[in-house]
Amino acid sequence: KAGVTQTPRYLIKTRGQQVTLSCSPISGHRSVSWYQQTPGQGLQFLFEYFSETQRNKGNFPGRFSGRQFSNSRSEMNVSTLELGDSALYLCASSWGDPTYEQYFGPGTRLTVT
Amino acid sequence: TQLLEQSPQFLSIQEGENLTVYCNSSSVFSSLQWYRQEPGEGPVLLVTVVTGGEVKKLKRLTFQFGDARKDSSLHITAAQPGDTGLYLCAGAARASGTYKYIFGTGTRLKVLA
Image 1 (tube, each protein chain N blue to C red):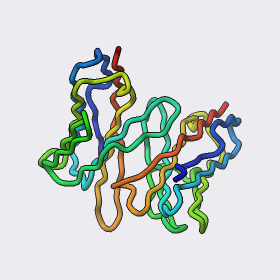
Image 2: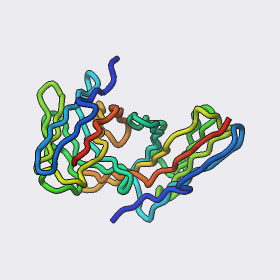
Image 3: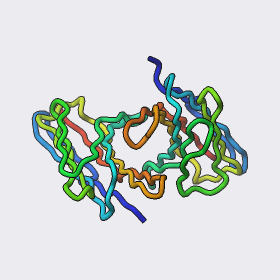
Image 4: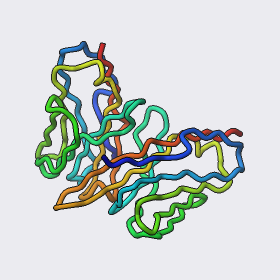
């Protein structure tokens, strides 16, 4: 069974631009969660989508948004990029409840200059 | 604000030694997960514990959930270089049909051959 895939793996953007990251979950998984990982703040929960609906949301500004498609693939968008948005963005998929079992992708390394 | 403090933050030991990593909070969690993350990859789920006092074993790894479900420990017996990585705990607190999911501060383990 193929694992969680994320594209692109690396991205360099300029402050003020916007970016879209993509995540393809494991086949059959309906939940996709997004996380931001930085050396200073560690791993922080962004949001979770289940069957195309946002089911949960962390404490991030509205510049961070996401969506999920009918095939469970998910995208995350960050508008008006700031230097502090430089991070590893991870997505994880699960069949139902991510707090019991979830599988992470390799992440997208975003650098904002 | 819910916090999950892990200790120690860094650990460098010789192959064959035993070690324990702690994950502590003042909050009660419905479930708690342990992950291991290697450079350039996403975290890999090791175990999920849900019952206070629960002990789970995974080969040389022993996980324990505190009786009050506020803390957890990970004990590794006879550590091997392959155990090297970042160990993360993550707790879920459920209320009113939703949940908060937070990661610990992380323990970076290096096992020397």
